Image (cartoon, rainbow, N blue to C red; front, side, top):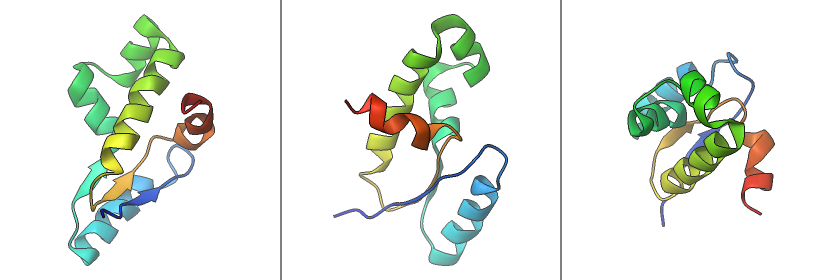
Length: 90
């Protein structure tokens, strides 16, 4: 069973920097959920928020977190992820 390591924290707190170093040290893939979402939607998160609102973005974020939960990887999450995951999951 995959066992990802999720790094959570405020925006700009160094999650991505630390996650990359940890992934290298443990020889595991690195995943940044915000980067994965941007690839999927073809626009910046700011643009998506403006067009579709925060609720729709949080749905995308939740789906991305569930997808990465199936991988052995070091995962850097978006700054708002921990605040909204519980409400998004019902």
